[in-house]
Amino acid sequence: MVFTDGSVFGATVGCGACAAVLVPLAGDKDNYYGGTGKAVGKNVASLRCELEGIIVGLELSVKYFQSSKYRQNSEVLYVLCDCSSAIDVIVDIMYAATGFEFFTILSYLEGIYSQK
Image (cartoon, rainbow, N blue to C red; front, side, top):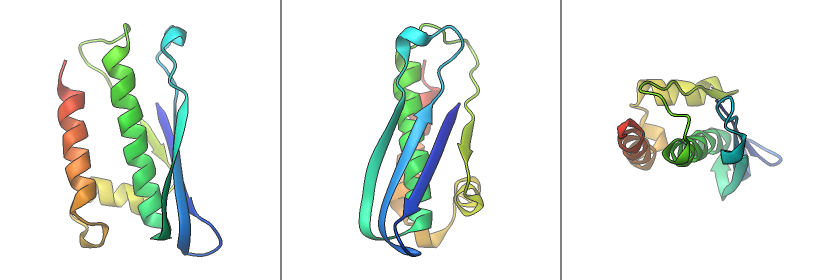
């Protein structure tokens, strides 16, 4: 399970950052990755920060699952995000304002995650 968040300081557009925290599988305390944060930019919208947070969470999850001894044949990853607009973008995949780069990264992560 991954918790993600992104925000902008002071307004709807401004200095933005994001973070993600991974909760490891039961019994896998030796392989704990914790959380990570990232500066997104100086003139960015909150939605972009939320999307970057989801990507950071997915990257964290890929690293975790690549090294976990507790993997099973089938895994379910829950990404918890408090921004319904970001969730809509990820689910719909075709949102022109977010740019092609997010979907390139998501496709790449999907390919890595689906490999054993």
